[in-house]
Length: 303
Picture 1: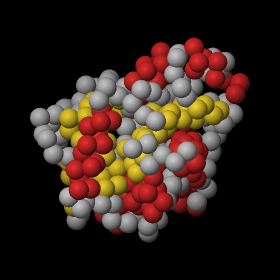
Picture 2: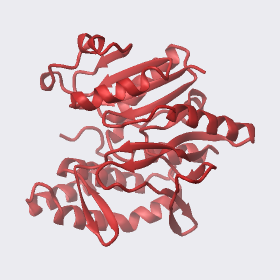
Picture 3: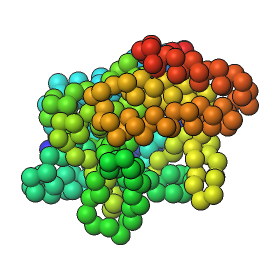
């Protein structure tokens, strides 16, 4: 197997990026680091810095922020050019443990041997801030199920889609289902791709014995026993804008669109009230603009 790791960065923290590189470089055939940081905003990340870490990485600075989907596609194209047969995505703050990739690959091979049309396999996430495990999301008719996953489970758990970071995907899946949608820029990119791949018959799985630390959002609030991650106002804009746009996209299954229809008003209210900028009216105006932009198809980079 020739597996390529694709790491997408944006204003990364040096210590966290070094942690990630040391975790993955010895476990894959190629590492592609695609940086979305505007050239004027970073002065330490370079080929020279990478050489100092004693890691072999193909580094490409895009010179500006073109969004996570563009960066992922750049990495996929490089992996195809170098005859890799799998890619595994990582965010800059991900912390994959040793052996995680081996467990993901073993689960994938077992599923393929059982004639399952596998799309992506990914780890069970443990949020570094909230100390909670992610759940598998499934749309079943009119219901959305959030399935608890235990590290004691041995079989992969099916999900409608996976978080991109940590996802192991065969190149052949992209060749059939397509690449990431760059016009979404950020947010819902992995979910849209997962649902699109599912429409081609691919099934996605979380591997319970492959646990990866991950950090979602800037802060979080606890409502009852539920921890809700918070983002800055710009990220909230993209979340709402892309949700509105995908609501009208008939290539996305109707169960997801019906579910998101009722969530969009909640997003607008909740993100306005919990705005990290503390300026609720400004946040509300930005979110209403997000709705207009999403429904009218004004996508891409907004700021």
